[in-house]
Amino acid sequence: MALPAVLFLAELTVLRGRADYGSTDPSKFQRIWRIVFVDRVTSMEDIDSIVANPSFPAINEPLKGGDPRLCRGKAIATLDETGSELLVYADYETSTGGDWTTSPLTRKDEVGGDFAAESKAFDKDAAGAYVVNSAGQKFDPPPQRLSGMLKLRVSGNRATSTAIETWAGYLYPACSYNADALTIRGKAYGAKVLLMTGMSFTMQTENGVTFQRWDWQMAINPAGWDKMLVPNRGYQEFDASGFRNWKYILAGEPPARVSSPYPLDANGAALPTATSVPTDKEFSPYYAKDFSVFTWTAVA
Image (tube, rainbow, N blue to C red; front, top):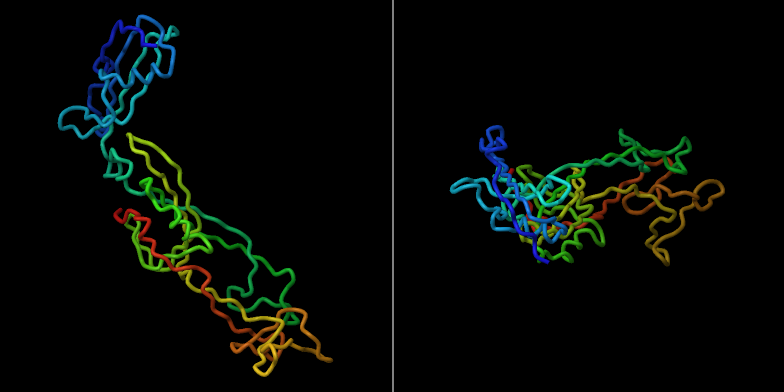
């Protein structure tokens, strides 16, 4: 069904005092038109047709020749209950600091931060002493302490051709850290300090461009995510002459199997007493990967 005939159409920008070309904010401007139809406008399709009418500017059309302000959006408001008299608005804006461009794929990534805190069991206190009871045994249940974490959040637009399966490999079978140093919006991060803990995306369309809006979240550890030290304890010790190369640890009088993990030295041998300080064993729980694949904006 065609739109009702237009009875009156006029631009009210000057009449409504909007002709100062953004004296308070030179990057923005708004134009206004009044349009009156001979009959009621009844559907969303009609509204879409009005907005697309060549009488009104197209998205990304300049305000005037040589002006950097472009039409970024259009809206309609009704003036009366009959639905036949409308106001059409066109909002113009220019790039501010280079962050806004007409194509969503050329805009700079955005950076923010989140925090998290949780209770965790711990084997060593802040002074480096192992946490054991007066008999030299580990507490059951183990004591807890709060552990906080600063998380870096990066958001940006990417093409629909993004290799989602490849990026998923940065989280599974375990999280990955940045193998090399990198810079995100002017802030430098050393190698190994960012651990990718999550990422997500949504499909969006803007200015006729369909794209993926991505969010990446990383935990920051100034000491690096490449190594983890675990106290060396167990119920068995190494025995090179044994059938299985291990044997149960016996302690006490009469000797009996230990009932809790016993401290071990670097060679897997049981230390003299349950209160002995175990050595630490080093592990690499996370994967080192190239974070440049995400093509984060480097400049501030």
